Length: 232
Ligand code: SAM
Image (tube, rainbow, N blue to C red; front, side, top):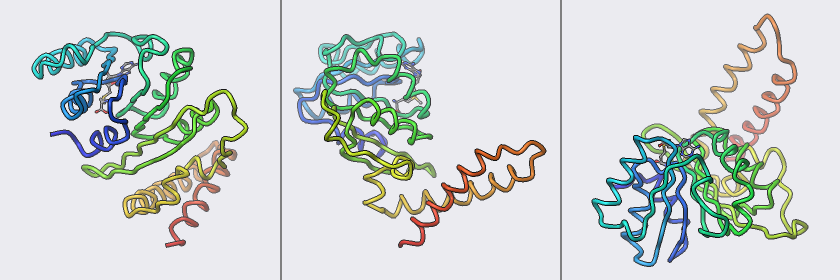
């Protein structure tokens, strides 16, 4: 069975989705979606031969070769502009997701929805989405096997950017929707991050060469985290 993390990603796809799953690995997500929804179609993109072959094998085993096209290539290189309406990029670091989106920007003009699940550095992904005129419409935080996973759902804001909300640095850090939901997992994650950041700041202050700018930024973040945790 599919992980709760990927089930939650799948939940954010509309019925009859025509989507790309970039970095699909075994193609478990597109297979799960297509088995549940007989109108759904997908492209599974993979840059590495191993996962590409695994994806091919899974799709074949479930007899979904007519609805899931497995393609070998880097990032959004495997899709044409307008070919799919939704894009999933899950299970990678935020920096990699950011670069895949940025490198493939010209493919995204007609993309209605981007669902991103960064394992770390979700802030950088939110920033890219906002700068590129995507509206963050939903978010979820999943705790699974001792890890926290953030899922960001963003819809294309079209050409007119004037109506889009302007999120603050603080909202981009926590996630504007997650911040209002204040789930149990959310508070647990930020308790853990508080602990981690306190230790990092302490180490940075003891370093021979102090990065004052970073220390100031992290202390600001620590204050924000304390604010969130004390608000409970
Ligand atoms: N998306 C799946 C999930 O969330 O469980 C698999 C995540 S797996 C940890 C990351 C996958 O992304 C790997 O199979 C890797 O080969 C692939 N990948 C990494 N960089 C990529 C890129 N630039 N383009 C396409 N796939 C990439």
